[in-house]
Image (cartoon, rainbow, N blue to C red; front, top):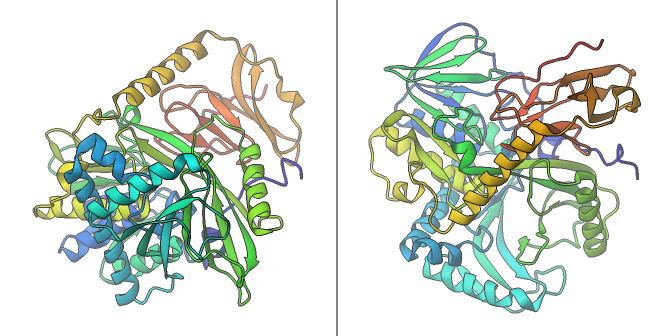
Length: 509
């Protein structure tokens, strides 16, 4: 199979959701009590919760609601987040592990209530969640995790054998009473309720700045929204104040989905304790088939062969489940906090009218919903028992100092090296149709793409966030920034922030 044939597209969720009209982009200026920026699970949930708390809310989304990170998720509704509870105990103490567990359990229960009370048709299914060890080396880690999770009050059990497993493993920790769903259809259900009760949504409206004040002003290229409170729920804050670009780190995952006979599917949600990580589950598809969804290990954005990662996932699915070529291939991006706890709260100390949520470590379905609860309580003036654990004003060093320093030193070193190294030797004329690369134009690096009509498009190869040199992502046909995770399509338009400006187009002459 060629690289082009392995190219990614929409996730299985986005490819199968019914198309709806785009919510009207912002035109002119508006006023709201709260402006929420970002239409993923954190933003939509926060907007709905605040509306139910009596606030007037305007939600802004740069693309379409649910078409970002949430739309590429494996969508496990679980408080089982890999081998996290033993680590939380060791780094932060048992009370921290308990709060983390309670917040994610409460989020799971809240999601289930919405599905039930709003009648959301989103393929909701109750399933156990497993962290499994194929090799003997990881068995002690799995056993410690089961014990720590049980101490945190979770329905966790250490198991040596389980009939639900699709292949032989040494041991696993099983979380009962967990669930899974279609995240895009779920968000559409929340949006329908939000709009029906007076909520305002503006899609295709990218926020580029927030001016603090009373009220604050959310600035877009289409107009402004003045609001008493602003919530930034954009995966990573696009505002550099607070320095979140140096506190959370961008990682991508590649994913595939392939059909399997309904009679031969794993009855649960699974993630490996062994390396490389394999996370998989199934979803409803046809009367006789299920869709097997497999996600691979995290890798720093712009630092891996994405085609090779897809091939490895296809091999895993074929060997373990006998799948043929995947029906869907896609990539997704998450931000990781060095101490394993998301940042939720004020943008910076002393500024409580602008709040953020970021660093969900690829577990944003429940952790993002918990973040929405924390944000809503803060704006509504209510106490929240979990807020101190997630406090965005913490440095995030405890237990994660070495990782935090190492990653930022690597980013700085890479940035400096790019300032003195020569442009790559490749010329734009060497590109094949449908191919992109970083090339040399007049002795300087340029991002180049030749479209299917043969026309070459040239852009400045520097990311518009902080000037790091972009890299070509073959499988996803994008120009990606290894420093802070901004990504751009072949037209130079933004796919992922924190960048707020598209690439600068170069004169083809």
